[in-house]
Length: 412
Image 1 (cartoon, one colour):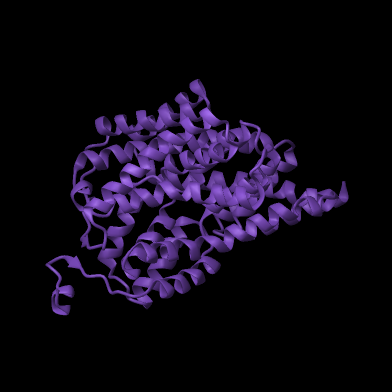
Image 2 (cartoon, helix red, strand yellow; image 1 turned 45 degrees about the vertical axis):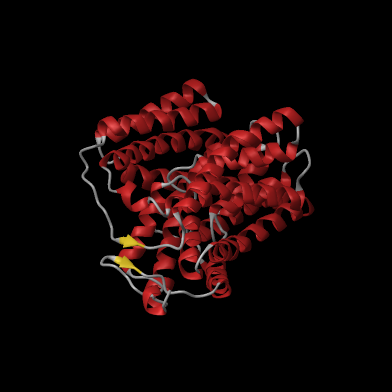
């Protein structure tokens, strides 16, 4: 096939500007070290660096890609990074380079913290850890505040969120969370069809329909078979993979929504103590890159073995894998699917249910474990106002509450 043919584009389809996996790795390593502020902020960093500055793709194509990743469960900013790597790097190698570079910096810092946490135990250190638990209260409350305004703007979707709360309260655990998302999706098909449709421009990726089908089949198989293997063999390594894979596969609405799923997977099972869970989650707010790297921390402190570096690697790969497989699977089919009003209505309902799930997570385990005294409440409200009203970066709130916790411990 001639070069002229390779560069040919049909109307409305953007041809990829090819680079290399090495180029993709270096660009996303810089982003992984400097992208603070959560998934929405990450999308802004990508746009500034890759659309405006490097011109890897245009605004319309970037909007198309963001729409795909917001439609799917999983960490949207990491899915966008992977897809951009595929687009620029010409295939899977570019996607893996983008994921590794964007993910490893925060994952390594969190694992190092997990290894060093015991060495820093003491009065002041315990005060810092106390402050980190309050960070989780502030950040989850901020996430609910913003998501509720966006995802439940009308009576119908507010009702779906309340239904989700009722289901989670009634059934509890991961079953209640899954059931609430399923019911929210069905309710969306019924109640949320009158919002209209919005279809961005087309975007061509080097992923075949056959590769997409294989990715979707693998995604489904990994939802089913690891749990069967774990039951048959009693392998904790397989059980660890299954717990984090399922958590990553069921997340709609952003990284903070994984909190109740992970709490069910590792705290309710006794693998990780609630105090360690909230401390790590609070620290994760100050990290650049994706919040899902919290999984590496949990895998390293989980018990029984494998934990440490092996547990961190299993948990990290497992939680990101389902979202990555879904992106690979959907790239060839996205244009046809996303134009259907029914698919858009279903996702509106699922996203509204997510608001209800996150609301319950704010109460249990976050609020119940961290806010005990009036002083705790005052600090939590202060941190929330710093995030929402003064719009301070999350790392500033982490530093403030950690310092407040250390001061509180020193004067008691």
